[in-house]
Image (cartoon, rainbow, N blue to C red; front, side):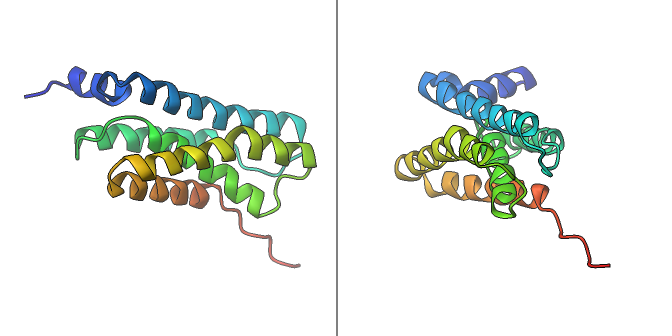
Amino acid sequence: MTTILQTLAKGFTYSGAFQHIILNYSLIFLTLYSLILIRKSDSTNIKPWQTAFILSFSLQIFLWFYPGAEGVSVVWCTMTGFGLIHLLQGKIETTSAKYTLIGIALVPALLSNLYYAFTFPPITTLAHFLAILMGMLLGFQRKPALA
């Protein structure tokens, strides 16, 4: 029987798989860094990212305990979806901010999702897709009604 600490260690460290630790924590850093840069450099209308981050991390920890998942991919996929919906909705105003998001976060996330789609079971790809969708829903902003 696994203890809480064992489950947390396994979840945070991919059971010691160094390449997944580096890849996934780098993606969290890149997605958050790009969102922070955009908010500082753009008179942007994007929502603060902190709520999406906390919700995705909480869900990720829950998934470690219930189905026995490992890793933190739900976090970076959610943050990827969060940035993507703001890009698609035109909430990122300057060209440099758009390129920052695309280059720093979205392209690496897309490539990583392709890597996992080809090397891991389909449930991993499904989980990544659902996390991206969750991020898009958390970041979605309705257009104001016309007065």
